[in-house]
Figure 1 (cartoon, rainbow over the protein chains, first blue to last red):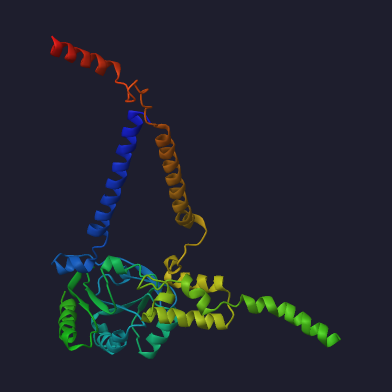
Figure 2 (figure 1 turned 90 degrees about the vertical axis):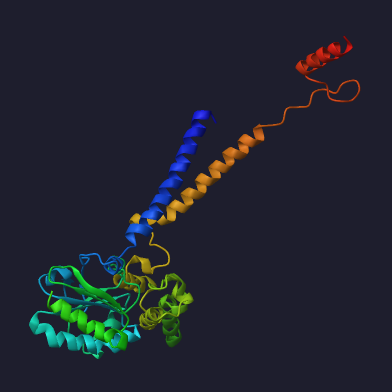
Length: 186
Length: 151
């Protein structure tokens, strides 16, 4: 191997390793940073857009459909026990405030579709539900478990904070009510 | 005799169909749990149990394994399969490791070939005293040093 070929091979090897390292840093620093983390830092965050199949009806549903209205965005799965416990809280909120323009939008993820439909029917969930089986929206929002709830203002920006865990829990119930009120006045 | 022929014919026809029915045990290692990122046979997460129940229901209906996989992919996306399908872009996942292996084999072969060519220089012929002879430059230098010493 001549000196020039050897040098080229060494440069290419170093460039390859540097490229892979840069890719790793980029993935950790940028791609994995969901909206929840930015919101936690106090940044003004646009709610990540999505367009998904509807679980409760034929056709698609997108967040943009509800632009101009306050949205309670709830991520859930039928395999999640706290999701069952908090379902009445969400349904009551939807029924109480929908005349004031508020929308409760469920996003069912990592779920068998038939089981999710049974769950929605058994728990009398009458608000619109999007189906995200592959979990495509999770990293954008920074969802790490179910259930998690976000609040999207009429301008499409996230408001208040992300609530992790069931909304029926004492530690979350009061904060949820506050965030709904903040959303209605946003 | 006619009954026997009919029975054997029914067995022959029913045999392959019965054998084609998938089982949960046969599919657990080929399907991923979407939350825990392991195959179903290694997971007891709620969603994994749900997918297992789905596979069992479909298997009981004797739906083919490919059909069940297609239904799971339609719901969870291609990542639900432990091995990527052998089609389109997914071929990369099969071919890249093979390519890497071949490239590694070529590099190792070239290095081994080069190392095998670098043989150590044969030792110079032994002197009359049985020790290896000095190279001419060293011998000249030794002579100069001895001459200076003698002088």
